[in-house]
Length: 125
Image 1 (cartoon, rainbow, N blue to C red):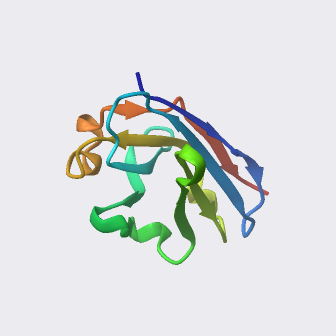
Image 2: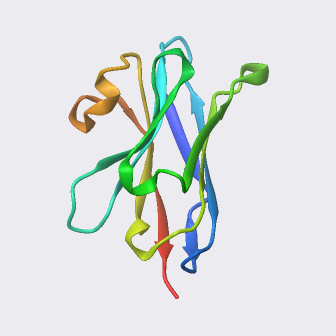
């Protein structure tokens, strides 16, 4: 069973920063890609940032230049981070860590196999 546990959400003022973490426990299951989605109230879940083939990264247009996805695979850790800078009120959402054995499936929320429970990020003054 794959378990994804997010942390790091909270309340931040516009222009501020937060760093989200996702610790993955995968046992014998294969994970070939991880990433972050978010879902704002009344909106569909959307991809924010993801690792693609060869370890490259891809970002949604609204967060390009402000968010950075990174990972730590040292010492058997499988931890993914999302550094969020220059936060805006429209970034307010529940942020979900996602993982999948298939690179293509990560682009479609309906096809992602593994999800964390989510962490709330609120950007407000």
